[in-house]
Image (cartoon, rainbow, N blue to C red; front, side, top):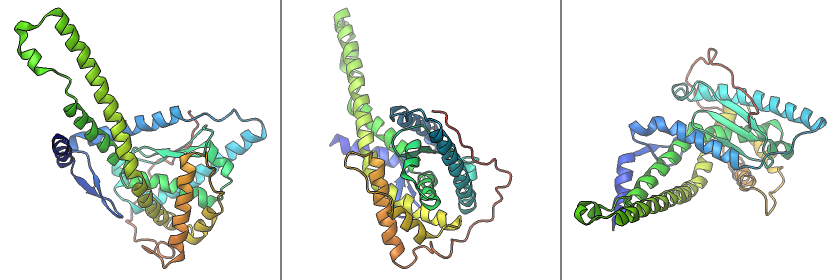
Length: 305
């Protein structure tokens, strides 16, 4: 009976926010919203640290890497301009998108709520055309636009609060009966406190990861729709992008989960483009808010990892 009450209270504290496409999301209380960017950046760094580094490039491979970096920069700038025109509130959240190519072996992508989009070096070996590469960048940008990182942070906070309540770190009855306390009892209580805290932290981490994983499929679908809308606004043809995505080789059985996710996205986008235009994605981009981005600094590209 206690767990539902804890989670219900946490949900009431957090509240909900409407996703532009499908569902309502968890939203952090106003006092914690500034914490989201810090936590999201930490989460991004954790993903990068745990990913396997790419081997050091040699001669022609280095030239190909630099050419790939420049393609990412050019495509990212084009998408960023369209994103700031389409979503006028973005400049209130961060001044620019920053595009980073991380020297990681496997294909992949990641991002943070502060506008950082990271593409793994392994994406280059997929030999993607500009349209497919633009979709990958746009999909990751759409996770930022749609507030998915904020939702993930809120989920982690709520699970952490619930874990601390369910695994109390203080033995209050023992503290109240202080006359019976001894050095041995105090040592035992301290040990129990440390153990309980460790259990609560482990439960919080595992629980938040599991709950966030359950959100992930719907977040990806939402990001796909926003990405196709963004691509149309930036001048890409949706059907051509779908064709190029379908040409990506299917993932290997032991391949990274990101490639499986990309292949599923390609299948859904192909199905979407076979029917009538949805949200006017193919021919008529949505009406955009006239906002100048001329004074904003351009996106950056770097290889810091």
